[in-house]
Structure formats: C-alpha cells, structure tokens
Image 1 (cartoon, helix red, strand yellow):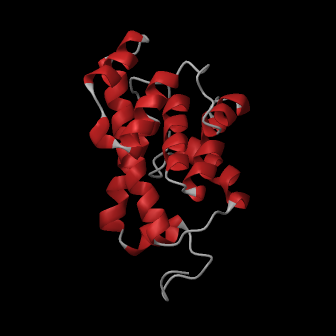
Image 2 (image 1 turned 45 degrees about the vertical axis):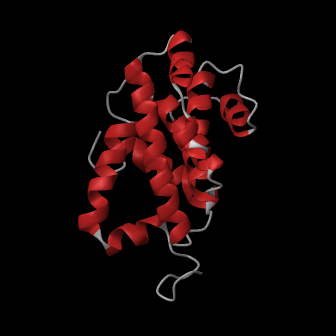
Length: 173
C-alpha cells in the first residue's frame, strides 16, 4: 500500500473514479486506440500494450492485457513468445523491436529502426499507431504502479468480457 487512502484491494477503477474528469477521457482514448478502427488488428494492439507493460514490469497491465488480447483472438503461443522476449518468429516482431527500444532507450532510436519496420511490410501508419500505444501504456503503467495497484488475475476475464461487450469507456459496442 503506497497511500493511506488506498487499500491493498484498490483497483484501477477505484483510482479512475476518484477523478472522472481526468480519467474518463483516458478511457475513451484507450477504447479508440485499442479497439476502434485502426491500422493494426485490435489483437495486435492489445499485444503491444501487453508487451510494453511487461517491459515496464507492470504485472497488473501485463496480465490483464494478456487476457484481453487472447479474448479477441491472440493465441496463447503468440503472447508467450512476446512475453518471453523470444518473439522473432512473430509477424509483429519488427514493431515489438521498435516498441522495446522506444520504452527502454527512446533517445537511441534511429532512422534504421524505422526502416527495419517499414522494410518488414508494415506501413508508417501502423508504426505510428504502435508508437502511440507504447506511449499510452508507459503512462498507464505508471498510473497503476504509482497508485500501488496490485495484480488481481481473478477479475481479468470478467473485465475482458465487459470491455468486449461495452468498451473500455462503457459505451455499447
């Protein structure tokens, strides 16, 4: 427990409910970013969120978005490969390489890193979408970790079902 006002059972929803004017727009943002029409498949976007969270050591976001990705079509094997850092055989590998560098050492990115993604057949729009997902999850991971939100795998499938039905921001799909 990091704060007296947060118990060890605090959830991300509890944190978001404290400041709805701040956090509700973020829920709409993540809905648009991960689930609405985009340049990458939603399961790939969820996988990028999972991967970024794993790089940051955010167990809550890694675990929950792992379940979310699988709930919309990512395979267990894809997720395991990405999380084991042994993802070179995945189609998404060039993007994951870019996201890893962007998360771990962002100032070391070069044009060669961009060219590597583009030469693998991804579009500039797909890379830009991955960059925003990476940036968003670096922020979300810090919100979760900063508030001391603990891993709670017992709720992740129920959360996935609710998100799949109503969206991250509660709008009906």
